[in-house]
Length: 282
Length: 261
Image (cartoon, rainbow over all chains, first blue to last red; front, side):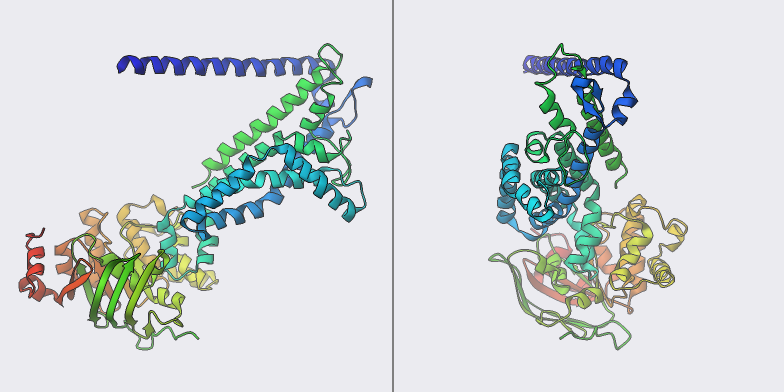
């Protein structure tokens, strides 16, 4: 018994160490590549520049950073009302087995591959925007809509759990005073669930920021961001586009590392915010 | 069609329960309860666990309806409220019938906001009026001296006994006429319990009160009448002194003397 425990411990430690090592190597590759890039092209000048023409040695990634942040935040804003509504429906309105079925239903949508969301974007969102705005229909707005739809299932399942965690005693206290179910929802349940909902939102944002294929299918792929309705790119989509253009050994290849590093930086900010905001909750 | 909040007598209402039965799914929880409690009196409900005491309290403010598959039959009248009438104003009823729970359940907000919650729900916006209501309610609940100047602190920083008095203040802030106390001292230490008991004695004749308790001495100390419930039935009800000195029913006597299986 004790021997097995010890062996299990060792297996755990070894695999943890292995994981950590692989992870450190991956980060190191990106950081060292990015370091090469920064030494020749400068950090601020690359981030602040919007001119991207790698074959002419113009490596301004400002457009992509702005694109990533815009598309992700807009997607979050679009996803919040629907996700909270679905969370309330699944936690407060549906009862018993209907609640379980509802969670299962949402889980199906979590597992839909992103290329299908992109396909839906191509066949529905892009033509729709095209008709409404008399533009090509490709651009950050379409990308945000597709991304919002993609993150709603995850966001709503997490919100649903957050709302379900609110102690019944708070709710009884409020109802017992004569508050209606709606008043209790707005004044007690949602505020009490807020820290967990913020956390859910940040997990959704992290997913959105990293999404590549669904965004690439509808954002248009132009290297300069001008408006929500005109083609643009994000860090992830441009990485995907330029991988074949800038293979290892080609001058300027390391800008890809620099872009990857920026993705990591943005992700780190999200994780940090998650801890910050959760800590300042109840 | 809403009924008037039924507070014309300027005092506490009486409570009349007729042929009340409650089922959870098909399981009977209360069977044919008939009782009458005079205005401003304190009734203690005693009985073994699962005898229907808490269910009975939750019938009186219709909290019972929040549970799925519950069936209620019979009639309950609290002052002017015909509790199970389809047209009764449930919000007004719950406002008039305050409830204090077994575990102190302050909301996760400041002390002030806890007490101001009810008045705000009922539309009071003036901050002067809110401050006065909060202060009055906290004084009534004997908590004011301990929390004055700390109104912006989170209510969860208070001790258990203080939290329970805060919950009482929160209930008082909407000016109820009836207080339902569901084992209000079960999770408190003896000193905190004594303070709650003092409050109940002070509140006598201002509010009609029903207290569920497992503590027989407590029932003896605070109540005017005692009702003994067993397996969903009201076995015996009478003046506190009579019940404790000369119970009529054998089951009551066995329960009071601890010879109870």
